[in-house]
Image 1 (cartoon, rainbow, N blue to C red):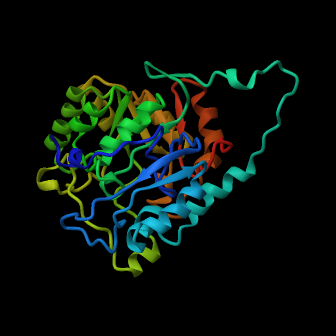
Image 2: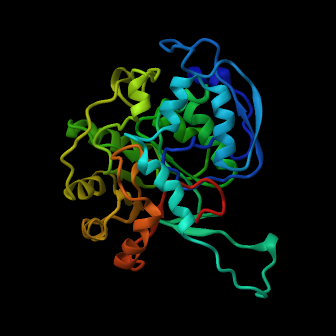
Length: 336
């Protein structure tokens, strides 16, 4: 039994959502209680920077409310790491502000029955009950003792799709076994091509249904505030890497990498981090089965345009040839 299983607690429906700032493809933001808990003793972690041991139900119905609770639970350093964007955080703020550029213009008298609206969607061979995806983010062990195992169980209860980060605290195999819900695997290719291929083969063997290739983050972006604090992120081992240490990312990515992933896994490849129409066209030409319009939640290059701002031009270029996924700045159900 993995060590984090020994601290198991009950998770409510839709229990684990990413904290604000990091890219959310979407969130199931029902007003459900969420268990917030951390072990009292975490090796190699300064507990002044991580949440103290608490067990508290949180009534969550939007990301703003979740942030309010998070500030009370996390240490300041951990909160800044999780919630902040990069640089002066212009892109993080723009991701949220830009949704205000769009408004609903509802049609009336259409015979719609509120409780019978069908939100289901078909996505790369999966039939999902709603179009909300938990987008990849690493180190869930900072947020919950069961790490990504808890996330997998929580999202499975809503029938949603979980994208597992290669920078997870738990191993991809343990996450895959945690629930029967659909899962994709996200990868940062590394400078060691053989190691990247091994990781991809493990994801295929574990049962992941697609590979998400992140192309918009050649290194972690940090906010000015986080750097001022001295980069105080607590270190937790990564479950998918030797000795728990994250290998160096490959920065000279090319469209040939999409073909390599397809050849190694035989799985659909979603390219995550597209913000330009011509890159969307190149991704399709390289064999991408889907495109995720993303600026890494404002956590990579600050000054990048918001996802919703660039989406129309990309959609015009793609014209429905492959599915488009949008993340960043989503705070409540009425966004999007």
